[in-house]
Image (cartoon, rainbow, N blue to C red; front, side, top):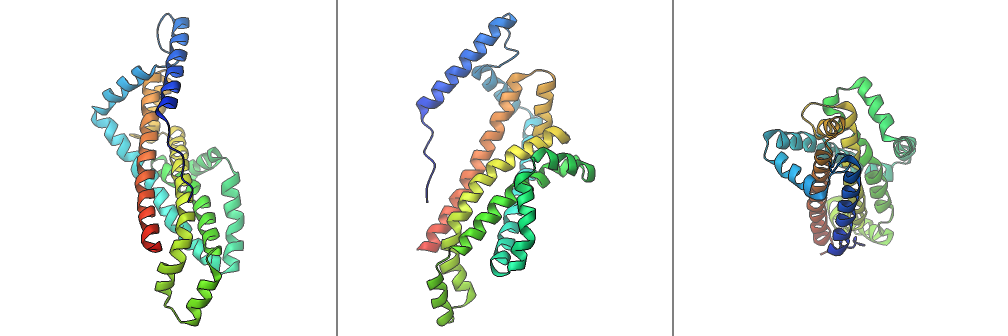
Length: 253
């Protein structure tokens, strides 16, 4: 299983210095005011200030519950449908155009269309679920198709129960594919979910806070909220992938 290389401290430091330099350069054009681009220190100060308010944590809880909830529901649905598609050809053929459309259509089109039929409050849940479904469905389906045929034949010959086939044959084959899909999907769900909130503007959401920062030219707040989205995305991705890795080790051992 191929893992992503760790981010080096020197590389992070380099880009922070580039950010600081760009902020100072733009500030010189506005009389020393960092209106166009907040500095890293200014963004950190705003983040700490926001973290001391109840509204900050309410917005984090509001957006996290919907975006991550939509992602988890989509993962479950994708695994179930991929299992059916692997066994039933007509299910795969039926879902193929739908998956292709979701992959090809811009997320903003889905957001605008969804706003016609749904309230903005749960818009991010729906959009996050839509964006996560294709990679999980396709990867799980591929994992099932790459399951060792000889092991499956042996299991049928010796009449191994389906529950043991799932634990001993299918899980070790599918979980690495599922892991890759989740790693991709959790990043997509936050990008698309935040975009949905910025357009739909549900009250008390991170997306509303981002839009407010844009309207009032609060670039410090903009970077602070962006850092929050990145942090939550990375945190939940690592926690979820750790659970998947543990399941892979148990299935393989």
